Image (cartoon, rainbow, N blue to C red):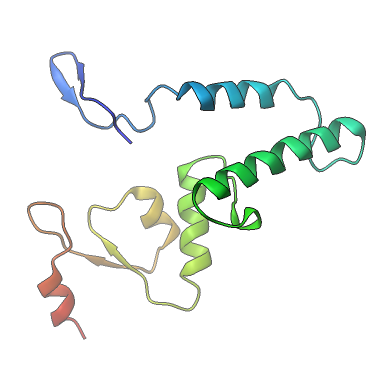
Length: 132
């Protein structure tokens, strides 16, 4: 989430989500994880250590959101997470997507019905009510 406006070449830059600096706690945890050499899927000592680190991180993240540890899934980024969410929750359902939705969602839901938005970028509810 953007925490402050950034000015780039005299313009106000509002899309800072991917470029915001890491929170110091997140940076510390990431660096600690990068120091591990084991594969969390391996059974040797280094792998078991990496698995413990991963599962501890999963448990702490899930607890922070009031969820059970096994329900927390880490992805490589937002595009993968978007695709996973659309595929997991869109199975057998009709999918509606606002016209201003991120391209990652549009690509993950190729058959989705695109809904028009108003001047504020909000889905046109009257259009939604009028459709069959």
